[in-house]
Image 1: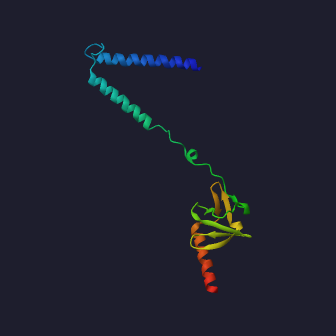
Image 2: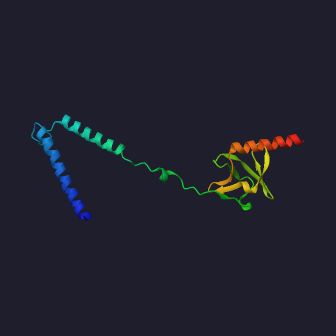
Length: 157
């Protein structure tokens, strides 16, 4: 059907729906449907019922975005290069948890400042995504490795 035919059919349907409601109100009113002679209580109750049904239909509609729509576009992590490391840049683990900041680049290792210590990490352990630099481990595992490295240096002194 063309859009013009649909509009005409919709208009005719609305016209007959309106006349049916008016006739029903007139039949139930003591004044025979003359303006101002209707039963206001019955009309108000009908309006409340119509409004409640409309609100129910609107409230149960599926207007929420789908999970794939509300998730931000994320780019996959790729290997970081020496040019990606700037002093003071934030560093996160693979889950996005902040680990520390980049202190400097020293040859094939990056000096990471955790706030408690500075430790060298091989350049190959880093990646980057659309939010910045990543370390290819979790914060918990990184903290364990830092503690082991400190224990090893304390034992050799």
